[in-house]
Length: 278
Image 1 (tube, rainbow, N blue to C red):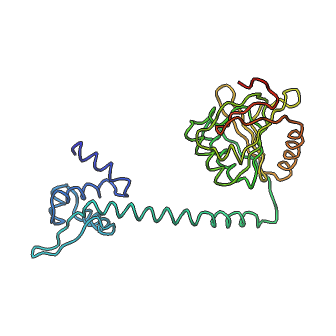
Image 2 (cartoon, rainbow, N blue to C red):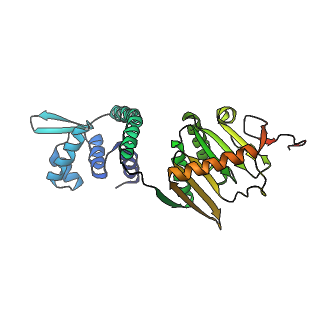
Image 3 (cartoon, rainbow, N blue to C red):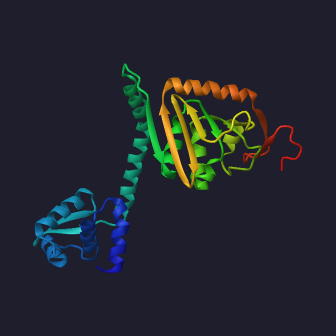
């Protein structure tokens, strides 16, 4: 098989066209009006397999069948069919997105219908595990309480961190953060609405609370993670009693914590009363 053919097969794969289907499709692009026998001989495939492949291509409307004096012949569809496949996939994705909200609500109801509310603990490792814990926090209803050592850019690439911030805004999740840091450098280029409407941060001295773990508190979840020896370890605890208790502790410390002044829409902040925030 030529390098060009290999490349074309790779390009066709995202359209749901398997290797052998792509091989037959490309053959018909070059040899319009071929019979199954001709395809079988040219590609050295059993004729029964060729018919199965042609049936799948006909179902996808990637091939059309023509009747002639010498029997049935086949032609490959034009590239316009690819555009039609994309449109169909876009419709399918749109439908899935519309159904996702209702599906999520129904699954939540199914889970909450149990008469016994059980706690559970989930463990995660590495950056992928941290991504999962952070993604789960997008389920926060109304507010997400955090204790922060570093912002998301310390663990994720900036583009991914920015995407998460926009999702927090879309979900209208108000984030309150406690930190031992006395200055907050700029942390976003695009999540200006988060800075303005959905983010508060306060400073608490280490002698009052030495924050050594990153903490999330939301709904019935208490989650924490730590970066140590170049390894990320995360624990996610589902317990209404624990989450409520930790929420009370958070707000007790929040009332004692010192406010920051937000300096710009990129999230840069300094403690109120600091003469030289730079």
